[in-house]
Image (cartoon, rainbow over all chains, first blue to last red):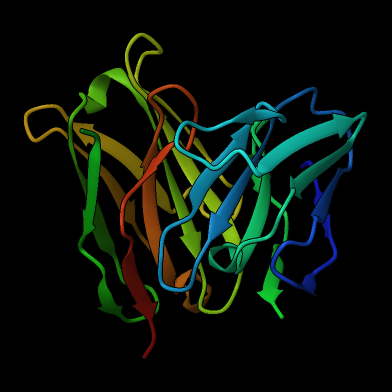
Length: 107
Length: 119
């Protein structure tokens, strides 16, 4: 199985800050990575797929990039509504796996 | 508009069975890929399994943790996806979500249904 390791596990930042979350895959997954945002009591919401493609309707302050087996989610200017847990997911091979999550708090 | 509504969750004893439903609207289940994902209380997301609709011959994939105990199926007449869960264990306690793709996988999600396995 492909393991995904997210870092950090949690972070706290100010409104307006640039925030970066990293996801490292245990083996190559090409561009088969997605990012999700989940707020308490809600279903996950797809933000990015194919490593860097912004899902329709998602604000442009969210972006994704990759280098080898390291993937990055960047929020260019943090907003209050971005407080949530973020998960990466690989869909390159079965079983589909998720990272352990990164909890983002607004200071 | 794509909508997914899960139902069928509840309290069941260890070793028991439960069938979850995912009613779809806005698309045809039998023509799409659909997934089940679960989330134990306070924990992260875990993929459970996938249904591949036409033209991929209605095949399925499962996570190792549920293979041999869970079965994914569909009913075209009800435009629904099902998750039959047998020999349930306490570690199967979770909110179960169904999800589907239009452009990409996991694009649309239901609201989830809670399954509690406890004596």
